[in-house]
Length: 260
Image 1 (cartoon, rainbow, N blue to C red):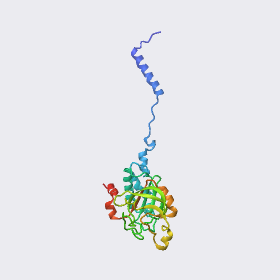
Image 2: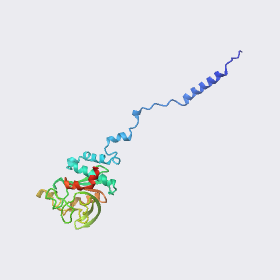
Image 3: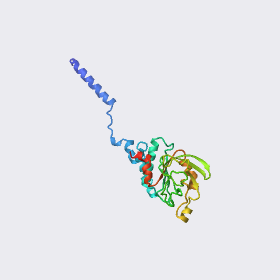
Image 4: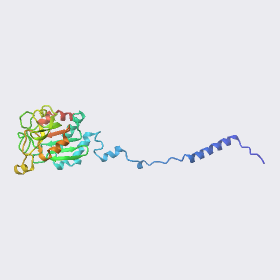
């Protein structure tokens, strides 16, 4: 038989070709991924929930609470809420609040016949309480229009407070407050301005007189809600007492710091 004379170069070429063919079976071609089929990234989905980035953008997210909870329909002034949130954010950043989950707003731009206390859970986005709250007897009758930080003035003081601890006093279960604004409400402790329940905060008085009874300056509550509200907001949460009072806004360093 005649022997084929095949050059060595051919053997090298065909050997390499066989190796490449076998590798294609061992390692199949990667499947192409459709980017549209991938899960949506958290950053993109966050736009569906205005509270998703609460920690990163507290102002924008907290301000969205007003519309989400329909606080306008409950009577809370948009300006009161906006100022409350801006000051709250400053206090949190400064480490002034031990409890940054709750904010309480007394909207004294409303008459006392309206439910003008709003206790809001910022973690779970709920209005925990919306009820009546009294103002000082020398601040006005139905409307609170006059405010003071002076002892024995029997007037309410505006601005930001931190809630402290509880005690049992002449008005029963009560909550101490620390005024956080010098010259505006920082005499709260010496004036014994506290949160407590009172018989004169009732719908019965509203029906008979058209407005609530008044305090010596304390933000007094209905007796049946006094304890549950105090237990929810005690221990370092923020209370903001609001009125569209030009004198307050000209003096408040907390609010001035939010506007640069």
